[in-house]
Each structure stands twice: as C-alpha cells, then as structure tokens.
Length: 448
View 1 (spheres, helix red, strand yellow):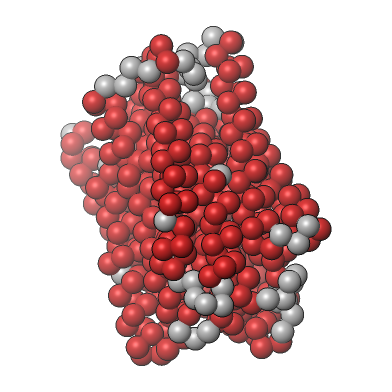
View 2 (cartoon, helix red, strand yellow):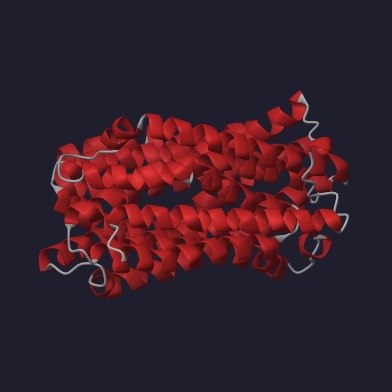
C-alpha cells in the first residue's frame, strides 16, 4: 500500500491506481453493453427501451453503495495519511455492516413498490411488463449490488487495489456469460438480463468477503470483519456519511436526470428511446473510463492531503485532468468517424441505426470535458469537502441539466433533448475549473 501511495513518479503513481479502476469500470460497461446486445437480438424495441428505462433505477441502488464505499474510502485514505491505522480499520468494519443493512432495506422496499417504481422510471403500456421483470430481479440482488460496489472503493483505500479490480472483473465476466445463457439460450428476455446482473454481483461479494477473511488471518488490521471491531462513534458515522451522501447523490441525481430525459424521449416514441439507449451505452465508454480514472486516483489524493503534501497533490490532479482530456478527445474522434458501424452492432433497422449514430455524434462532444468534471468531483470528495462536491453534482444533474432538457426540447424538440448533455457539461467544466483554483488559493492562504 505504502509503495503505491508514496510512489515518487507522479505518472506511475496515477497509472498504478488509475488503470485498475479504469479496467473495472470498463468491464462494468462491457456487461451493460452485453445486456443491451443480447436483448437487442430479440429485435423488439420495447425490450431495449425497458433496459434503458431501468438503468437509472440500477444506478440509484448502486448509489447507496457510494454512501459507505466512497465515503468510507475518503475517510480511510486520510486516516492512513495521518498514520491512524486502528481507526481506519474500524471505519472499514462499520462500512461493511452498514452496506449489508442498506441492501436488505433496498430489497424489501423495491419489491413492495415494484410497479410504481417502473411507472416512475418512464415505462408505458408497451414496455411495462418487461420493465417490471427486469426490476424484480435487480431488487432481489440489491444486497449484493450494494456490497460489491462498496467493496471496490473500500479495498482501494487500504491498498488492496489488485483485489478490488479482480472482484469487479469477476462479477462482470460472470454477468456477461450468464447474459448469453439466460437471454440467448433460455429466452428469459429482460428478466434474464437482470438475473445475470444480480448473480454477478453476488459472486463478486463472495470474493470480497473471502479476501477480507484471508487478510484478517494475516493480521491486517485495516480489514477487520468482526463485531468486536464494530465501535463506530458519532464522528465516524458523520465523516463517512457526510462525504458519502454527496458521492451517492452523483448517481442519484444522474438517475433522476436520466428519468426526466427518458420521459421527454418517450414523447417521441419507443424507437427514439431505443436509439438513444444504444447511443448512450456507447457514450458510457469514455464516461466510465473517466470516472474510473478519477475514482482510482481519489485515495492517492486523500493520502497526500492527510500527509499535507500539497504540491504533490496538485501535480497528481493536474496530470490526471490532462490524461482525462486526451482520452476524451480520442473517443470523440472515434465516435464521429465510426459511429454508424458501432451502433449497427446493436440495431438492425436502418432508420434506428441512422438515428442512434446521430445521437452518438452529439453526446460524444462532451467526452473531453469529463476529464475535468470527474476529477474535480473526486478531488473534493477525497479532501472531505462535501459541500463543494455536492455543488458540482447538483449543478450538473439538477440546476443545469433538467432545465436544459426542458428548454432545449421547447426550442429544438428531440435534437434539443439530446444536445442537453454536451451543452450542460461545457458550462460545468468552466465552473469546475473556477472552483478548483479558488480552493487552491484558499488552501495556500491557510498554509501561510
């Protein structure tokens, strides 16, 4: 752990923590695309639309993991920077049990209000049955979805970077294999896609628990799994939840904004929803890789903050933003040049292919900006500055995006709805840069 967090070469340190996180996010994306691909083989737009409509609900479940995963990771990394290893281990223990309790509560709530949730997500008469089938199995798997996603962040914060990535990749590979079995072979349609997802996260959770048990037997005090270490106090809970809730709200508000978007897309029919769903899945490649890079680097930033290595921390942020921008530019060019060939993998009807290609060319314009936005969000989370992290989240998904969709729809109809994402993120990029430099100036004045 120490060798990773105290690596002198900045680029090497970033790649050591960033690449495994990006690999994990990439496999997550591949399983999402696999869901869509196997469902698309049915050639029923209503099924593709159902999977698209359920995506925000799945993200909301995952966001619960962020409360204790991202919140705990931020607190643990800063504690390790201050050499407070015992308290870091106790924080880890609290987060594990809290995730288990939250998962059970999500399962019960989801099954009890299944149909109202499906309607709220934007389901209509054409796809309500498929949407409910998908959501039922997602809620059944909620305890494992929450635990697996939380463990990813917690393991990174204590230096178990390899184990964090293996668990994420393992769950996603199992998911992809079961997608083929349940959808292509057994013809279980959207229910099969959701069941594959839940089983994949179950397997990942089992792997992480085994790792914790093994680390405990080795005497690693950072990963205890015992009620004897469950001694969370009010300050610990406040610190974890205070950072975790803004982290979770990133996903929750993204889901809310996607629900609003899906409802506006629904005005133009299932074909528009299906075409957007494919374009958005492909655009998720640069989005998730950027998120993975930023989240992977976050514990490194938090560790430097705890050690009071401010200049090193600034260099890490600067290099990470640069890498994120360059990666985004590469995807923008690729999607503009090869968008039609990519969407044709998932769609058969020519008019849907043309529409999805057009949507993708608009959406991908924001890819370079993600390097700034995602890193700034992770930067403030890593430093424990919950209000600033929350500000970025609220601006992105509520204050700017929802009014943007409504206004641009009124002005340019469907074209305006699709253009809302790059338009909003262009404005947010400028605001993030201003927030970062204002924070840096304030920090320097405090040090002096």
